[in-house]
Amino acid sequence: LYVNQVSGLKIPSPDNVEVNISDGEVTLFWEQPGDAPSDFVYNVQMAKYNNEWAEVPSCTKTRKTYCILNNSIHDYRVIYKVRVQMAKGFEK
Image (tube, rainbow, N blue to C red; front, side, top):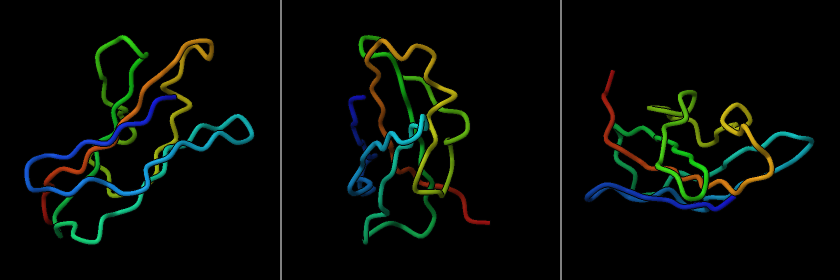
């Protein structure tokens, strides 16, 4: 897996983004930046290496700092890329 992180204007990027593969489970982890706004969410996107990005439905508009990617990996013989983006959310 190729890991990338992106951030919108004036919104900090997640810190220490990494993928952990253990016991057949593929999980993306990251840390909330210290200067994160109070109303934020994370969006995780994934794609085969030369394809367009697609949202990971279970990890869209989430406040969790991890994403289990198993359901988005359909062929373990190809290279995937994954990224996480912090975005302005909505306060409840």
